[in-house]
Length: 392
Image 1 (tube, rainbow, N blue to C red):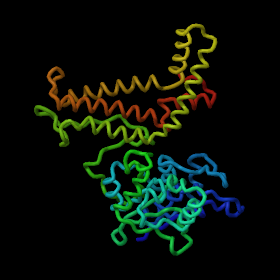
Image 2: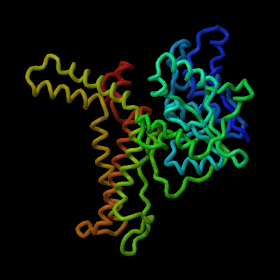
Image 3: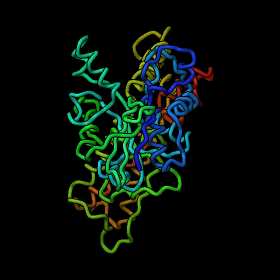
Image 4: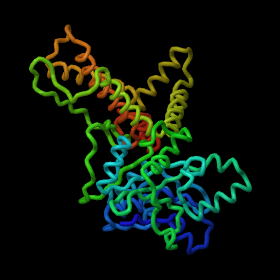
């Protein structure tokens, strides 16, 4: 089966009818359409234009033609894919992504596109060739910097790996399908964001896209588990085997349990939109400062500002909930494993500490999720915007 391109060159039919100038900023939604088609074995075959319409419904953001305002994130892609009938999740490792693709899934691949980041022998598109020539003459530094972009890929036994850039023209026979690549070439493409210093590791640039009823390969046992920021994290479930002397765990090199937990949480936290969180934090600090107006003395001003933060954000609730969950989980592991608190060996202490840290970090990840109203500065922002004032 060949991987069909969903071209962003024609993604906004309305603008074509009006003859408006088109800015190529629909790459995320075009790639969503291509990935859903592949993962459903083309039982679903949304067009790029339909994916753009879905984006508007999901995000509430209207696309203004002639203005670069319709770029998208991996988190938004997950929602648009769900709206169009598919399902997407973050890759947990490169091996996780490869296994899923070989089970029929498509991959969304967020890239820094340009010749300085890509394998030299991979054909991108005629549009990209024109882009390269134009910027080579007018501003060579643009070539070196590349541009942020969203692409997709799939694997099949007949054709191997196929990678689809949405700047390909699907109305032309030569560009209707993705280009054949090796796994090494695809991984180099996925590493473009790492090379551009946007992320720490390649798999953080990947989404795994599946379709209900189409079975993808299971996640490899060795792959670390990462809780996506886009969905509220459930309270951790700790499964401990009935003890003989000590609880038995999945074999893991000594001393790596806590490090693995922290690495998983770090991967989830790196997917947070920190620019947006920074804006929310700044907005809250401004409002807290306003609350101290009219107060005299440092203590009175500080008390008024802190009082506003406690009353209007969920930060205090997050801290309390994280501590409560962490202590409760650590105690539960200790009791279930038969460990004596006053006589813990290094492995037992590491196991209990890792479980407590995991529970705390899940609460923090949940608090940073903009779709979860329980915690965080975002709650204050939403309530103020709606005119509801402080929460009770």
